[in-house]
Every structure is written in C-alpha cells, then in structure tokens.
Length: 320
Image (cartoon, rainbow, N blue to C red; front, side, top):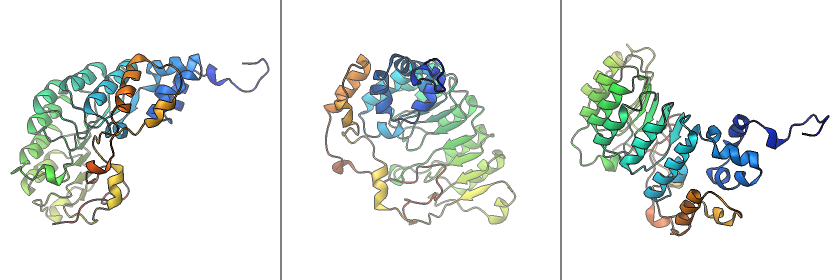
C-alpha cells in the first residue's frame, strides 16, 4: 500500500476477508479466475477460507456422478476441517459420504438431495456427523427407516430435516410409516420437518407430533393418507402444519430450475479461461468438456424443493 493512501490494496486483504468476498462468485470463477489475479488471492483460494461453506448443488445436477464425487472430495479437502455447510446433489459413492464425515467435524448443514446413498452407509456415517443441525435427504430413494433411526440417535443437535419424495419414486411402496416412526422416536429436538409425498398415515404423524414437541413447521403436502383433527393440532400452539392438500399446480417453467445429470455441462465458458490451474481441477474440467449433449431429452418434473420458499406451493402437482 502506498504511503499516505487512504485505500487498502486488494491483494493485502486478509484471507478471511477475501473468502467472504469470493463467496459472491460462482464456483467456476473461484476455481479458475481468482487464482490468476494475484498470489495472495491464489493462496486464499487454495486455503480453507473460501470453503467453509460449499454449495455445488446446482452445478452437480448437470454433471456425471463420478465428477461430482471427485469435486466434492477436492473442495472438502481444501476446507481443512473448517467446513460448516455442504450442499451437493447426486452424490453416488459410499466412500464420498464417509470422506465428508471424516473431514468435516464442524459441519452444521448437510444437503444431499437425489443422492444414491443407502441405509448401511448412512448408519456408518451417522456417528461421524453428530454436529449437524440441518439435514436434507430428499429424493434419496435408497434410504429408509434404518438410516433415519441411526441419524436420530447420533445427530442429537438436529433441528431441521427434509425428506421430500417425488410421487413417482414412491409409487411402488406400500408404506413409509416406519420412516415416520423412526423420526418420532429418535429426533425429539426437531423444529422443522418436511416429509412431503412420503407414504405415511395419520397415526404415524400423530406420533411425530407427540414426541417432537418443539416442532414449529410440519410439511405433509401430498401425504394423502394423513387426516389430522383440527382440535388436536391446535394443542400445539407454536406449530404450523402445511398439507396434505396441494393448492397450486405445477408450472412448466419449473422444469428450467431442476434437472438431474443430463450429460451437459453448464460451464462451457471454463474452456476460454487462459492460464494454468491445478491439475486435479483441470482433469475435471476436461471430463466436463468431453461430455456435451442437449438437455431436452432428459427433462425431469420439478416439485417443491425450497425449505424457505415464500410461496411454498408453487410448482407442485394438483391434488389427485
């Protein structure tokens, strides 16, 4: 910084401050552009300061599962154990969730929608995820009551759980009451619970209300077998129950906001960034550029997927 200047040079900012600033940039920019600006910025990106909160959920929806797993491992490693929030869609490797659990002792928020994890691997990982307070296992079709029970027993600070399902994914199931009962018996500190389109009945939901006495929000939209007595619900003065009726129909525009891996990269601009980047990231970007196919053939209906949405019913299908 020049003597007598009232302004501080950008390259002299402390890494913590740079990390907060870089949070406003896209994953692409942080990994490929920022490191080339100056040495101090490159050091900040390579350190844990930018990776205390990792949100690659949107990016991962359009990538091959193996690329998602590789990217998550690289970014979690960079967090240096300081990771507080991780959002990723379509995690496919059992070893990846174990890797996350082993390297994220400070983790508070974990969103894993559309992941291919099963009960046995989640039972192993649950004991290492004891610090989480928010968990999203929506659309994880291979997870059931055993995983939820293990999570409830080990994750004692859990206050928010999302377990939304796609109607077509549960069409062959007879019941998911065992999942509701697992929640009721092991997660007494829950304040927010979303189980939209889960195949549960009135009795199992009542068990949740009886045992989870701190509940403030219960979302049972699309749970057509649930019929709660209004007088009974009013006993819980702090509780807001949403559903089971779905008031709004889905909108075709909702498709633009959600798609699982489609074989197309949304980051073709990465190819035009000059200079050298880390070999690991270069390999991932090369794999992305080799896999380019149109999106139109892999469209998936999008259902409610935002815990804090103002109009939570938007983009939901009509009641049957």
